[in-house]
Length: 345
Image 1 (cartoon, rainbow, N blue to C red):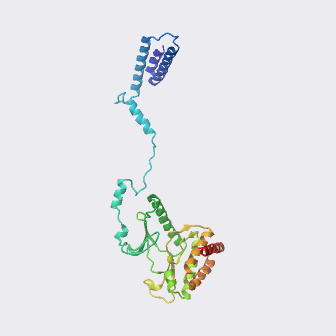
Image 2 (image 1 turned 120 degrees about the horizontal axis):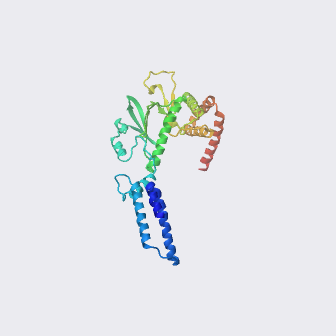
């Protein structure tokens, strides 16, 4: 009776017929195991059992054929279903590579066809200086004298980490240059940023570093003029929430009228330009401002005569800054910590 019901249901719904008949077979097998275990029941009829088995095979064949796609055999259906189920378990979204970077052969092809702009402009033959962060070259960019600051790779760092740090500092320096100019601080004009070579193209400023002038000796009038401008520009940066991070005399250029192609003017005063914003950051914390001032003091007071220059800086900073009180208090604390460190060694 169960087999007849299974056959009848297979015509209307093959899937349900397969489920019902599977249950029937399970019940028959359970009955057989029970009879063989206790031995008190009568032996099953072999003819009835063979009939049940043939009916189950027919139902299985009809069910498999009803689910097999057109053009495929019933023997290939389980294999195809397995592949489909395994494919559905894979992630549907694939992370794409950034534009301009490429993957595999595309990246290799892009590197081969890339043009070394610094080499084309003859920058490698005109290297001005090299520091811990990068090299500086003198080139002519778009018929203008320019400076190229390139950050080179650090082999002691992991390549992925080095690329991220270099990229972040390149973007940070570019933004700091733009922000400083918006705050009224004289900086070199930004011409071009090459993200592939990690290079920044800037205006070439015809001047000398404040470090060189201090070593050669400065007059009191020049000290007063340069110190006033430095104090004014540093105050503008700090009030605007920009910290230079490396405010030394090597990063302060002094431009005179004889350094540029302009007629000499006896009344002209030296002009100050701030450079190298590679370690700049955005902060309004007085501690960071105090550290900036302390670094500037240590760089200026390398000689006893240059003390007047720093006095002019602090005097103008107090006039130009609206937040000078907190900055001066932290500057005094940082100075005391620095003196204790120098005493202890």
